[in-house]
Length: 599
Image (cartoon, rainbow, N blue to C red; front, side, top):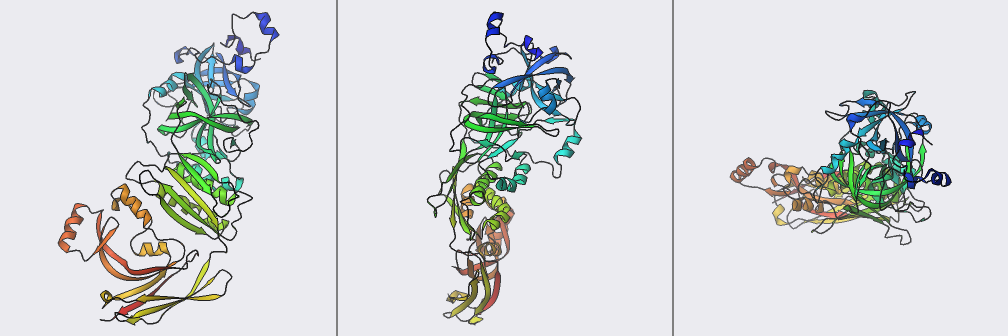
C-alpha cells in the first residue's frame, strides 16, 4: 500500500487493528468521504505527501501517491494559482497524468486540497502534474444557472496551431478530455475528425456507449450517488450514436457535483448531460496517455463549464434534440435513434455523423447505385421543414459531406430567435438505378413567337449507361409577354435559385424574423432534376425575399433610405414560367437560349 495512506481519512480510527488485519477493505469502502474538510492554499507546503483518487479500470476509484513540489502563483490568471506535484506512484510515474484523470481529488492529511487538472510538459524524466486549488472550483457552483434555452458556441481554435506547437508555447496545459465516439465505424469517425477538431473536440473512435448497445452483458452499473474519484462523463450525444468526454468527480455535496478541474469547451453557463461511465483500460504513452471508456446512462446535467472546472446536478435531465434515421425502403433494417445537445455547432456535426454511419458504416449500407436523403426538421409551433437531396452513391455522399453539414447548420439555426429544433428526422431510400443524367442538346422550335403561340422544347438526354432519349415540353406564350426579349434556361434548382436572386444562403439583413426565415427555407427549389424556365432580365426592388418590379422611384428612395440592408434595387432574372423536368436524377448543366416575343 502507498505509505501516504496512514494519514488518509479513509482509516476508521475506532476500528481495532486486529479487525483490519482480518479483512481486506475494497476501494469502495475506503474511498475518501464526501464531506472531507478543505485544505486552504496558504497551508500547503513543499514536501507534503498526498493521495489522488481516480479510476484505473472499471468504476472503483483507487489512490496513487504524490508529493507537493510547490505553488505556482497566478499561473492560470490573476489570483488563480496551480499546485505543482511530483507523481511518486510507480504506476503513474511511467505514464504521467492521463487524459481522463481530470478532476481526480488530491487529499493531504485527510483534507481536500485540489484536483488534478494540468499536464506538465510531456517528455520529462520525472513526472509532474498540476492541480487546481479546491477553492477555485467551489466558485463555480455559485454562478447563475443557464436559462431555459441556452447555447454558447464553442471557441474557435487558432488555425494552423497543432498540438505540438501549442505544447511548445506553454510548459503546461489542461488535461483535455478525450471524447469517445460510440456507434461509429472507424472510416466514418475519420471523415469527421477535422470537423470535431475545429470545434475544439479531441475525438477518438476507440471508446463507446452502452446506451445504444443491444448487448446488456457487463454494462456499467448505474451510480445514483457519485463519489469523489469516480469516473463521470459529459455526453454531447447519447443513444445509438454517442459522443462523450470522460473525467473524474472532484467533490460531491448532496446532488451537486464538481469535476474536471479545468474547462471542457469553455461554454460558460450551459446544459450538458452528465452520464455514468466505466474505464476499460488506460493506454500509456510518452506523448499523451488516455483512458478508454464507455459512457453509460444519463444521470444529471452539467450547467457550468468554466476555467476551474465543470459543475452540475444529479437528477436533473438536460434538454436535447432527438435525431432519427430510418430506411423506408428496407423495413427490416433497424433505425438509428440518438439525442444531441442543443448547441449551434455540435448539433449539425453530430446529426450528420449519425447519417453518415447509416450510409457508410454498416454491412447493410449498400446504396451503391444511389440514394435519396430526406431531412425533416421540426420546429416548435410551425409546420416541419422538409428538404431532399439525391446522392449518386456513398462516394458522392462523402465528397459532399462538407456541403451537407453546412446546409444542415443553415436549416437548423437562425439569427432571429433562440429557437432550437424539437427533432430531426432523416430517411434514406435506395434508388433503383444510378441517378446520374447527361444533357446532350436543347432545341427550340422557334426563337421568335407571338402571343398565343406555343414554343416546343426538345431536350436530348441520357441516363447513366442508358440509350439517348428525347423529352418534349411546350411553353404557351401569353399576351403579357408581347414585345419582350426573354431567355429560356435549362438549369438545376440551386442554379436557378441563384440566377433569380433566391440563393439558399440568405444574408441575415435581408430577413427580419423567424417566420421569414422558415418561409425562405420552404421556397428553395429541388436539387434533383432540371428546371425549364422562361425568364426576363429586369431591375427589381427587393424587400427581404419579396421582389417588386417597376416600383415608383419615390417609394424606392424612401424605403432604401430607411433600411439600406433590407430594401435593395438590383438586376435579376425573374421567372415568368417554369416547370420541373426529369426528377430523381442528378445533372450538372446550365443552358440558355434567347426568345423574342413580337407584338
